[in-house]
Length: 117
Length: 109
Image 1 (spheres, each protein chain N blue to C red):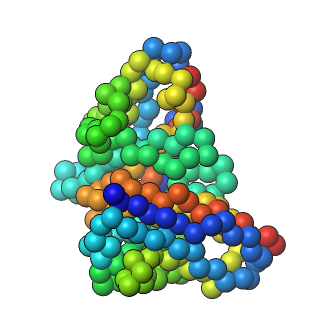
Image 2: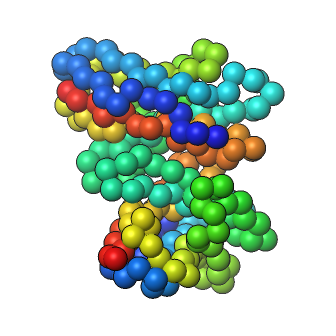
Image 3: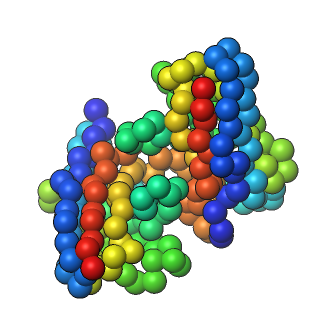
C-alpha cells in the first residue's frame, strides 16, 4: 500500500528556518516524482515544485522564487520541504503528493505551518 | 501559467446534476495534456476523482464524469448527494508547466 506520511504541525516566527518531512512507503521511492503543494488559509491549491528522488532533479514553480528547497534522503525514503527564512506569507497547509502519469493519486495528510510576525 | 478559472460556487438539490467548468486548459493536442479533478471535503486531504480528462479511479462513484472541449474541461456530478458537498479543483499537467490547479469551486447541496 502506497503511503505518504508527513510531519506534524509547526508554529514558527518570521525569520526562522524549518524543514518538514514526507516519508514514503509501499513503492520504489526513487522512481516517482514527489510534488509539493501549498494551500494558504481559505485559498486554493498551488504547486510549489517537484523533485525526482532517484537523482534529485528538481523543478520549482516560478512563484516560489527560491524561497524553499526540496531535499531528499533516499535511505529513509523521505522527502523534505525546507525554508531558510520563513515569512508570515508562508503560513499554510503543505501537502506532498506522488506524481503518476499526469495526476496526483497519493497524498500526504498535510502539514500545517503557522508563521507569526 | 496562471491558475485555471473555475466558478467560485455551484449549488444543487439532492438528485440534481451540476457541472463545473475549468477554463484555460490547453487545446493543443501536442501538449499531451493531462486534466484531473480533485475533491476536497472540509478539513480533508484532496482526493483524485477524475484523471486524463474522463477516467475514474477505482472506487470513485460513476456519478462523477469528466469531459473537455477546446480550452474548457468540465466535471459533472449527477444524482447529487449530501456527501458531495466539498471543494473541487481541476488540474492541468504538462511537461512544460507541470501542475497548474484551478481556482476551486465550492459545491453546496
